[in-house]
Image (cartoon, rainbow, N blue to C red; front, side):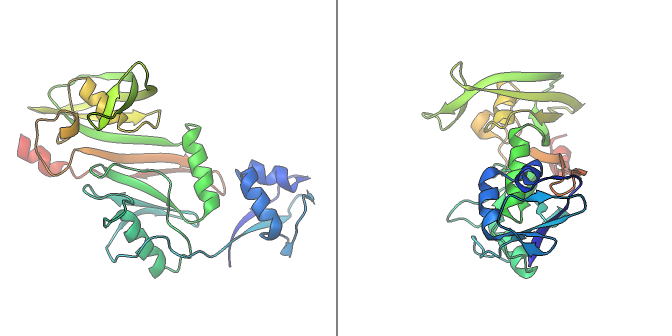
Amino acid sequence: MRSIEFKVDKNVKLKKFLLSKHISNRAYRKIIKDSVLLNDKKIRNNIDLSVNDILKIIIEDENLNYVPIDKEIKILYEDEDILAVEKDANLTVNSKGQENLSNYIANYFKNNNIKSQVRLINRLDMNTSGIMLIAKNPFAQAYYQELIENKEFDKEYLALVEGDLKIDENILLNIKYDDKNKKMKVSNEGKKSKTYFKTLKTYDNFTLVYCKIFTGKTHQIRLSSSNLNHPILGDKLYGSNYDMNRFLLHAFKVEFKRFRDGKKITIFSRPSFDKYLNSKN
């Protein structure tokens, strides 16, 4: 039986304690029915907890929600609640009718007896590579998505952009979907996006740029780069002149506080840009 275990550190009501551990009201209502143990005894009421009580939330076994496909994945980090892997370019995360990352994760879950659905915490475009996080239970998924919504989950990228770009500033744009051209566009009617760009190194025809996003808007790095007249190499949709089988954007770092104990976790992933750098110089 899988479970999430907490040691109570003060006298408090059960519901208040669980909410402080980022268990949602909806999850609490489900847990209280038949999925919580206090000192190994089932409870079904919002009772008083005492210091040093041990609270366990039972995690129900689930069937896989994707067909397992046997493909090796690069694991960057793993604990009881999440898995961090490196996604390759030219791979969707969960598109129907296509072999995708979720198929590979399902196979990993199957081989390692992780009886859980595949729950994606963050997403990357098909041609963006880098760090993807997957939750092993619904409570962890809810926690990490709340971190993202509250801007307490740092996501940082590296990009190769066209031309000589010297920059060290936040780019603020209002962006919305352009139905006609099937991409995002700058519009006064759009939602606000904020992206920090900093030049790291310049080459003959392009620039390596560090990017940090403060808003989770679709294509915000890609559109912001294009709006600066320095599109990401290979990103034909947003104006790149380079024809390659991907575009050079990589999610290289994530940082967050871990679900169960609040420990700060930092995960890195190195981009595979070298062959492009060597070929373009």
